[in-house]
Image (cartoon, rainbow, N blue to C red):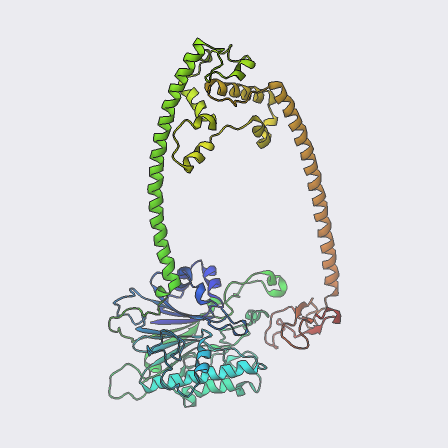
Length: 617
């Protein structure tokens, strides 16, 4: 059985890096995967962030808004299982809890009350440590797994230091209570504590005197405690075995970091022999523990920062995962996934129900579309039959009385002298062509067809006749071949009134006026093109001028940047972001990556304040 712990520094970023949540999870090939610092709020949990095939997940999200910490922490435990129901797999927990005090929803005690052993703490203090989303507890039968993201506290932040002390004090009480019940415990995660000088790149003489490091060592077996530091037990003398590196200094290039991601275990082994001297969960069931350095952001072969690598984006977290492998863990009784599973979160269940409803709506839409299509075909057949009847009557009327002033032959045709000279049959137009023209002729005779509502009106208005002017305005391609275009359009416009004798608004085209109008449009277009050309030229000149000015400013700035003393290379400017008397003040430091002082290729430690004028006021 394999367990992996990994501070992802934002779950969205890691999913984006790997392409999907499933690809991220399967890359570890582990049975239980514990993520810290997911940076997700409860309302942001969606299926693509929480659900993956063959995995059950359990989340704890930040609930507090203290100091803007909403969405800051967060942990998630993913368990690889063949089935989430009626399963005997150890990886599938029999119970799960958000937080470790018992006061939050889905607590293991099922009462929403503080766990046994925590009665001495105030309820507000218990809620405060759980509200930051720093722990998920899963009970796997043979052991209880704690997925932790420990608080971080700066040396001058008294409030966070006190919070961190309270957090670990309450946590230790919970562990002691479980051990008294005979339970085995595995603790994984980013505890934000490097226990010894061997676990820190720049440990000074007073490094191990820190109160959190003293507390960490006090719970270990070698100091009289109950827990084993699994990695250090397996690799007691390994140096430079770090799991976290500062992002802003490029310290990964020289492996200049600290080991703050841990795997701890406590409790007896699963053997039933009478003589259990020397037996423990650590000795009997922990096979190996190691750091997965292949997940580091900076890899051998990357361009160094001071040689142009600063502009290269490094993908990945500023932490490396830690893997531990267990052996001899038997199956447990059949059970189902706990109710804390992400599959039961309303935001995710609601999304799945919405997808089902969308599919149902799609089926209804397709049926409706099919009905509309058949109805449309029926309507078109009716209209074509009416067209045939109308054309027949038109032929009869025109052959008997061409110059009459009835509804069939409008008077405007007489005025233009068109009706008396045109024989429709001599032009070779078939009845179906005339009907096609009628169908596209506009809203006048479309009213004679039966109407069944707004949709049919919208469909008919779609085919309404466009004016000659609209063709010239919409298309600039009509500038070429104006004569042939004019002739074609005039013929087309003649055909329409001949086929539609019921229209009193048929437009009549004057070829000469159309030609002059075309000349005006051509002249206008030519003037517009010239203006656009001049505008583009002016814009290009402005862009070139701005580029030259920016280059000049860069050269001036480059000359004003001081050179570091160790390498005689241009330093980099930074700004103080920490609140205090120097907040907002600019300074210069060596551009190279942070590393050990013995390495001449690493940062030389150069520092210089910028001009006092750059101080933010």
